[in-house]
Image (cartoon, rainbow, N blue to C red; front, side, top):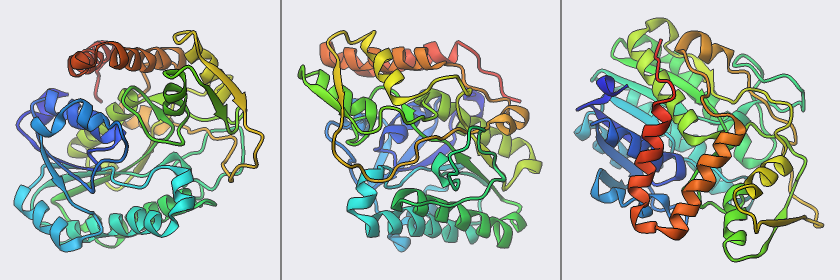
Length: 355
């Protein structure tokens, strides 16, 4: 993959977030010149701060809802690739701050689309939405890219709205532009070291277990498409590369999900984590929870067929990578940057074929 990104200008929105910080590290390791745009740190601790990425990439504090500032920055930087990750990504926070969730996820995306509409330079843009853009019918089969979009909670509704806006701009404006190649990436329930967001299963467990406390599980029997952050980011990168090479996939959406295994319930993930964190304890919440979909799978056959992508890590290996990172953080934090690079290098040795 390095030959596609070495010395290229890569803009990442939401670079201070969990996925954004790992993508920034990946791009930097490939020799890219990275500009990160974000409205600040999203958690404390922050993976972006832990890895000291502000010393390794260009990092700017910009709200993507600020059209004029964002446009000026893009025009000055002249990116070869754009990865749009900036969003309010926590379901619980979307209930607490619905206006901010809608304005960031929907109108922030529209701002970037409008800037791209008049952009003159050759650029590849990957818009990252979510697995939760699909209207969830609690079905066993994996959702396909052509399935109906929709959402109930403010997070999923705002992300499906953003996805529809992207498709609208592609059909109305962007497909006519020879210099612009656009793809939509849908994935979710990404796990890995460095995630410190509240309201997510693994970070909540780590915070409690590191203090020898019991974690409260909201919905222990809900099923999610858990997958490691490096698997997902590799999918985004494969999409960007193939958009540059293959005009036939321009404007298309692609799912990036794990292989549908027999049991991916919350409780199974917690039990697998306990294999590597022996002191871990949990119990089920007795309080009434806000609405969350209980069954969710993605069909990623399209990504396999057209991009040559499939996940390299199964659930057990994903958990191992994840817990190993947190254990390193708590025992040898000063070397966590090198350990993160080591995880990337070990992962990329598994298989690295692009169609």
